[in-house]
Structure formats: structure tokens, C-alpha cells
Image (cartoon, rainbow, N blue to C red; front, side, top):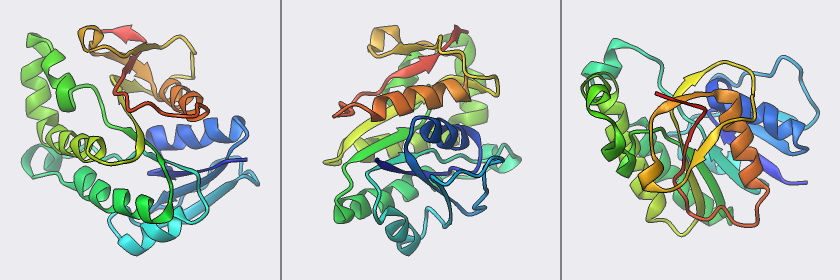
Length: 216
């Protein structure tokens, strides 16, 4: 049975990944500063208190795992608009060499539609509010993506659209080609379902799909 480390597993997509992984038969180590537990504690679930920006914490969290899901997030606040964001890139700068040291090859990183080269697919009406509200965070996510792409890991970068807390539908769309990339709405649980299904593959394939259900 494989063991997955979920960085940022106490909430959001990370939390949904933990649930989907357990349902899929995986062992899960959920790393976060909050070290929150799932409502239904499972023998295959381990809450691990640690900071993604602390090298020692990351090294300890990687012990004995077979794959990593990096699902970091920053809470909505005025700081997100007015101050530089560096969490995503700095955490990735720490994670990649520690994974290489530990011999962990598989990395799934959740960024978002608008990061990296998907930024060119933002339509004209959405571009101004996107830049105003999310520009700083997504500039850092773009740096995060570049670091992953330059690594020797077997990686998958997942770019969900606008996230909701709806139950998993199983009807989401995976847009793999640049000419298909569009913004849309998708449940966190559907993104988690896609991630767990991809982790079952022998190789993640170094892809950067956009995942949505409904197009905006």
C-alpha cells in the first residue's frame, strides 16, 4: 500500500485529497501547521504538525512516503492584494531537494488556472479582476511551477478553476492541451478525485492540465 504525504492537508483541496486517498486505500500523512484531523479518524490517516517552510519538518514528513501532493493555500485577506506572496515558491524550493534526498519521485502540485503559461488563456473580461485580486499569489504560483518543471521529479501540475465545496460529481473536465484551457468552476472534491486517480498511474507524465466542470 502506498503512502501519500499531503502538504496543506488540513483544509481545502488538501483535505479533500486526504479523504479521497483514504477511500482509495492509501495511507495518508497530512502535514500542516494546524495538524487538523478528519471528522472520521481512520487508521490509515496520520496528522503531522509541521511547517512547509521548515526544512527539518519537510524532511521528517517525507520519511517513508511514496508520493507528495502539495496543496498549499493562503487565506483571503487584504495582504493577498497589497503584499508580496512567496509561500508557494519558497515551500517548493525546500520541497524539491528534500524529495530528491529522500528518493521520493512523484509530486502533484495544485496551483490554479492563470498560473504559468495558462495565464495567456484568461479572457479579457476576467483579466483585470484576476490581476487585481490574485495577481501577487499567481505570480508566485508561476514561479512555483517553473521550479517544478525544472526538477528531475515525475510531476503533475493541477490547475483547477474557481473552487466550490460541492460534493464530488465525477463529471469534471480535464483540459490537457493549451488550446483547450479555459476558466471554469469545479468542486474541490472533484479535483481531489482527479489527483488520486492520477497517482495510481505508473508515471504522472509532467502534464499541466486545467480541471473544471462548468465553463465561465
